[in-house]
Amino acid sequence: MGYQKPIPLKTQDNRPYWDGADRHELILQKCNSCHQYSHPPGPSCAKCGSSELSWESQGSDINGKVYSYIVSYRPFLPGFQDDLPLVIAIVELEMLPQVKLIGNILQCSPEDIEVGMPVKMVWMEIADERSLPQWIQL
Amino acid sequence: MESIKNRYAIVGVGESERSKNSGTTPLHLALDAARAALNDAGLQAKEIDGFMSYSENDSCTSHQLATYLGVRPKYVKDILGGGSSTEMLIADAVGLIESGQLNTVLIYRSMNGRSGVRMGGGGWDVNMLQTAIEGGSFIIPYGAGSPAQWFGLFATRHMHETGLTEEHLGHVCLAFYEHAQRNPKAYFYGKPLTMEEYLKTPYLSYPFKKHDFCLESDEANAIIVTSAERAEGCKSRPVYIMGLSARQCVSHAHYWNDLTEVAADYVAPEVYKMAGVKPEDIDVASIYDCYSWVVLRQLEAYGFAPRGEVGNFVAEGNLRIGGKLPSNTAGGMLSEGYTHGMNNVLEIVRQVRHEYKGTVRQVENCEIGICTGWAGPDMAGAMILRN
Image 1 (cartoon, rainbow over the protein chains, first blue to last red):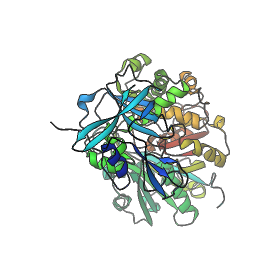
Image 2 (cartoon, helix red, strand yellow; image 1 turned 30 degrees about the horizontal axis):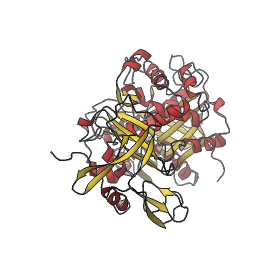
Image 3 (cartoon, each protein chain N blue to C red; image 1 turned 90 degrees about the vertical axis):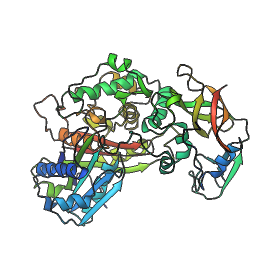
Image 4 (cartoon, rainbow over the protein chains, first blue to last red; image 1 turned 30 degrees about the vertical axis):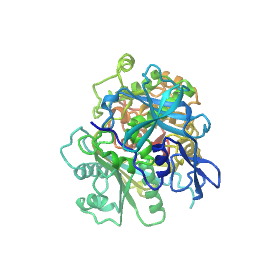
């Protein structure tokens, strides 16, 4: 059986992010006008409306801490039924606390998860030449 | 334009039967609700010249509803939307009446929310979800496809920052379930809830248990808005709109960026200013309750309890009839029924016009009520009504 969960769809607005993820690299969108990071990325800056955007690599060694989380005991989407309870977290990046990413904390029991928990980004191979950024407890 | 304070009124409210399986179409439900609202107002269908509705592509059109009421209206409008849409359409109706384009507007929400298209029901195409939801490719691959999960992410952070506990969430549920026991039309009538039962119920999606979720229902609601002048000729006791904030947005708050602010923080000062009242003047409330936690965050936003003290406010029983702020007195979306907020509007109208006088459902001496509509942390609307 192959990977049964949804695979991130690349669009004209997010392609550099997901292409970067496939290379195991975190690429963030940044506004050249107000110099703020835009995540999720979009067709223009969600902070100031400028369309002067660039993409900035943060490399492959990404740490963060849990900003918030939930624990799903039901599979609200297909493919997740074998992963319950599933921890879904918002992770605040260590080097850019203004940027927050949603992901799963892998191999983490509901008893262990807490706000502030340090985590490290890992890339999970999910299909041919496709990888999904995920997190493990540090 | 001058202030519209007290110059417009809700003159009719009505609903269809409520169930988990209506066995009929949204058009039939909408007709039932519209006829009930017309009857309440003492108006003929032909006196309605504007029809408006909101839906998530799960309803009939305003044009259809008007057609089968035998009306050729001057104006129809159907918008896509959920919570806070009632307030927005009322604001639109007021604007159209103010500018002389319409006289009387009927606004409805009709849905087979349980037997038809379910908000949290699954069965959605995951690729469609990724494109349909803003930022979808950054949440759907992680299993975050349900509003319960998105609201939960806000809730956990808010609980962490302010010391709110699961028991505080439980107090919201208990108050509304208690009100449902006084409302024979509530879906959870006859199903009271204790704190012990609440706390021992397993999580569906931490921090939420099943009681923290709104219901999914098949039902339709309708309300009729007209000018204060025309309201005098109606059969019902008019409920006047003191303040209205149609729908304010906070950019991109929905998923993760800044969980400390919600759109209701911006709506509150505007609606109080127009109404010329303060939170302590409010006698009764309908607080949008798609999840229990949403009520707590709005109590902060609308100034009913300071940040950090909302938990004590609800633990003291203040949301119950007899408390400082009787809220969702028909049971709310958690325990009465769910039409993306419109059933809460119906209830506040009935309370403010003292329709339950002489029964345990009536909030004593309630002259001013607030109704908040909220679709998520990213958008909100509200209105203040008076007898």
